[in-house]
Length: 309
Image (tube, rainbow, N blue to C red):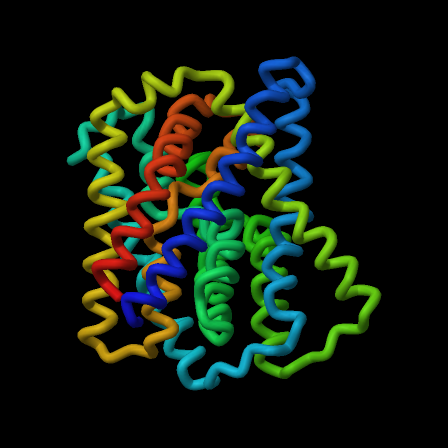
């Protein structure tokens, strides 16, 4: 990328993050004004997990404009699977080195593995990445769903993986999106419009929920937590940089490297918070990390892209 091109992209990144922040503020204000409450958030989480988030993934491929090479796509699938497997290992180990208390380690485990690839990642990638890079964003989201609804559920709930957990709306929609791309399936106008409307509501609904969670805690206390800052340095700066350099050393597809760097550098995912809400677990730790990483990602993402590309 030229310096002039990147300057434009930096502005777009900041613009997209500002939009996300405004949506969060709506949720924050709504909770403070008692427009929404905890019960509403729990009910909303079910709609997001089971309906709007799966639709968001399919929305990205139904245009039929992606022309990426299928061999590169297969390589990207393997790399994403290995990458997430490595993140799962790091998620089990790193919280101990960060000094996380035992009762919060499962939350930091999930936050180490999962970034906000759907709710922030897809809109941001759409704005700043080449069109063909979007298939790699989708692949990353497919792996996110597969691991989240298997590994994530296991880590959060401590229960054995069951078939009904594997066949979830998230994994089904991810596979469907890949099949639509692979076989160049043309989706009729009516179902395509339905999926778009449903998927496009995800970002707003999720940020409303995030804002409501933020409203329940002190922002100042979030920024005073040293463990969160250790997490930010490791997870949002060091790890994405290292992974990107390894992919460059492997001479991987340039669009895939750019897409995966962005996906790894995103703030902590909302899905652990949503699943915790759905299962009735305490969400203070998750909300704190999500809030802090979302705010600092304005700077960390732009810094990483400017240095690495």
